[in-house]
Image (cartoon, rainbow, N blue to C red; front, side, top):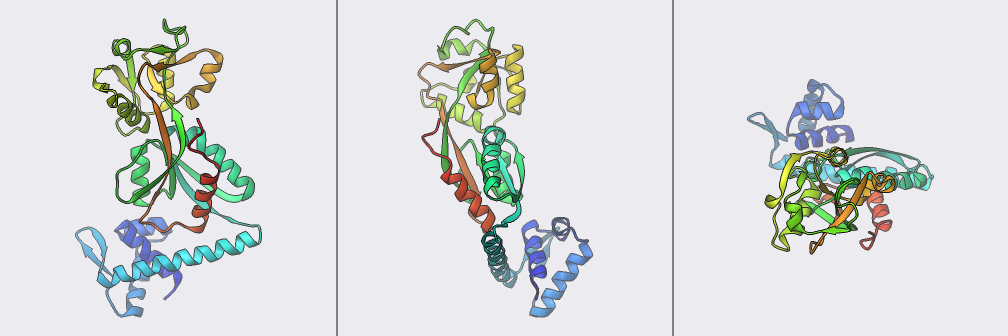
Length: 301
């Protein structure tokens, strides 16, 4: 019974298919089937049942799966310890970020991490919060920073940064000399919204509900699925929107955009370091998680 056979077995269980495991392991499907057959022959038991189109662990398969994950985690921990001792920590990390942290917060944190560990390579996946959570759950992302709380029982989160969303208008807008606007006035203004899975949109909706307002009262003229598109829409005069100032610093500096507060609406929101509690975190990902926690602060604007 070898480590590679156990690794392939883990992938079959996690992807619930031999074809999915083959793709993840860069093997042919017959090779994956052969590894599983060798493992079953060695242990003299059936480890995987086919239920419809899915590959599902048997009772004994579930036991082996738990031990196999522990063995893989221990092997990864041993490799990390050796590399770190030699000053040569290396490996790949797939990290996710919702639009604002993925575009404006994580690149700086990852750059600083690589200053300490230059042989680590990152794959940064930027999506809306809902999509990032889905990828954490299916294992395609190992760690993430998102802009909204998740109520999924498998997801753990830690608040790491506090941000304040602002109403963003074109620099030439009639409100450009003001520093705040009432919600009553905002109701009549063409408004660009984000999609429901966006952390920014969820946080804005929650802020309004706290003072008995609702996003349904807004004059929605467009829905745009990414922050860059929203900013472009605001700059061109399509409508106003609520965005993090982190994303519009250049526009605020050159005067093409202006940020206002909405009277009586507290639009502070948090960014959360997020992971799947049901998956064993590799030593490298655990090290990155601790690094991010140490370099972020919930009191930071």
